[in-house]
Figure 1 (tube, helix red, strand yellow):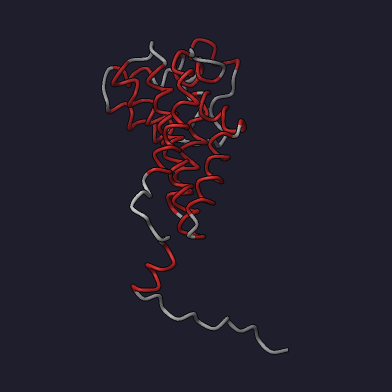
Figure 2 (cartoon, rainbow, N blue to C red):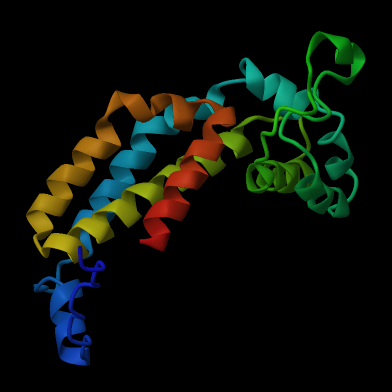
Length: 193
């Protein structure tokens, strides 16, 4: 048989076609839908501000020997880029958990938590929840923007994003502090698209 051929090249995108493909007609009130989505996203998770550390939150933040130095100096936050996700947890009972060698590396999550620890200490949990809530708002707004850019239909984008924001599947990622890695991952993917 004949060798495989590459598909024909599409014509280059001009400034005119790029604008047409990525923006929907705007009526001057295009900011209302994103504002409503952000408000719904915040209102939905405001009750979590009173929640304490739960399950892995306790191990990963409150009882993590790698996290505690961040309360004293910000340089410790940068050290977390060289550590595994579970490294340093339960330092008083290290034998109960194999913390190293799991090949689980989430440096941005650890770094962001360390910045909160540096700014506020470990005792209060509400700053960690604020971080998760704001991250979720960013994900919701990025999704709305992506849908508008793909289909150019603002109503469709609003309804689809509202369903996404209200869906209970996301409650663990937002209400559970350890779920920040999921929120950051979603923001990175949607922001990259």
